[in-house]
Length: 231
Image (cartoon, rainbow, N blue to C red):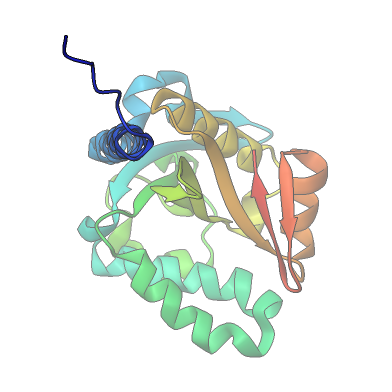
């Protein structure tokens, strides 16, 4: 009578490793597909029609979506001008280096933008910046701010990472920033992202107050110069 050969501990370990490796690869593939699918949506506003416009507190604006590799030269110039106005002081002596980084980040194919345009018939007031970059306005109304975000991976979790939320001073403190962040959270949820993340310079007191006190969002990971916020 033949005796049955019992599987060795070594073969069981190998089988478990293969199963575990397969699970890891399948999870990675699913996450990659999730990010790829989210990035393929060229108009996130189509899923949220009420967020195409904002008419409150004396503001009348509408939103347009665009990709980083499709930006016109005037819009690129506008973005960098607004970034410099809003961020040069918080960054201090680090700004020249950060400016170069932001210029590169601005146009990569994965970059996604939501631009805030004033309703054309409401544009009775122009800043010097708007007068300089009139070519980027066309019939959409003057740009007064934007959100730059991407779908990416952070600690093996798919997230929507907000790189920039920049508004001209005259449209701040009117609820528009909160409105844009609500839209961002909806976009993240629709695309099955695990979180919304962003980084705030500690020296940027206005932004710190907005995210930590007004929005009261999420977990904060602190280092010497900035907060990374995860909602």
